[in-house]
Figure 1 (tube, rainbow, N blue to C red):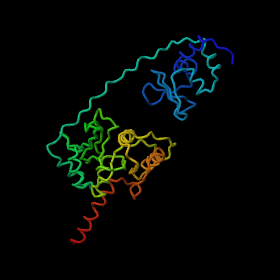
Figure 2 (cartoon, rainbow, N blue to C red):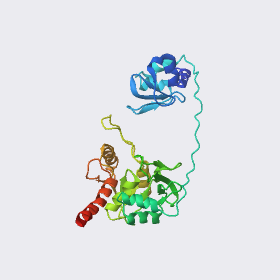
Figure 3 (cartoon, rainbow, N blue to C red):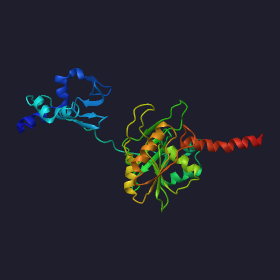
Figure 4 (cartoon, one colour):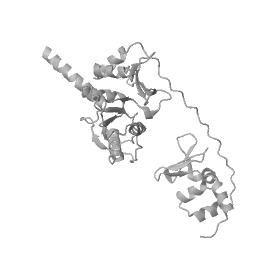
Length: 321
């Protein structure tokens, strides 16, 4: 390879990808729906931030900021070709410093004197009073004020609250209120602890599913029951992509080296089955994987608990006639 002066290489490395594209290939850029973000017309999974020049080509899982890396990894130029294209350029674009927003302080919502409304709502969804009492006693479930939401609390190894998920109990509008409390850390998601000697953790998509499945298993605490904080699955029919290991599960396993089994209790829909498959692939080399999805297509464990609770009611109504 011909010798290239170090000064030319240094100058080539200083040119940003966004500067190069705007100057020499502006017709190749198109605005994306995200703020300060552009796409390439010839690579739909390529995104570049106009403030930082940070680019990522998702389908190849490569990224960078410099024009040099862009020309080599995206346009397929050799190192020599890329340097020769950029050696006479001088950087005129200086990305502004990215402001880091201060982390929001985590504070639990105020608690109601009792859990009467939340208990009534969750019992209507098929969850047993025994399971609810256990969770209240463990300090991981309560009713908030002033809106009387169900608050599912995630605690760290020192029993300090680090996460909270709020679930509204009034669904009159057809859309329930759901949100994570500001400042929540997903690594400390809602978890019903097991009794001593347990080597299994069951994972769920939602907090209510945790309590529902626990109800169906007679309130047993023979395993840890961990909520994953939801899953981000592609829509059915869209191109498949990989799933990051759930942050809550990764942290839990790091704190519980005694665990040898992971029971996957996601929903029996496309997203739940997709998550189940990816969790199995990610952990089957190190853990025994048990796939335990609801029997009914499209159902979650909350649906199953509600159906189970209504079955004896229907039988009693028939017998009373």
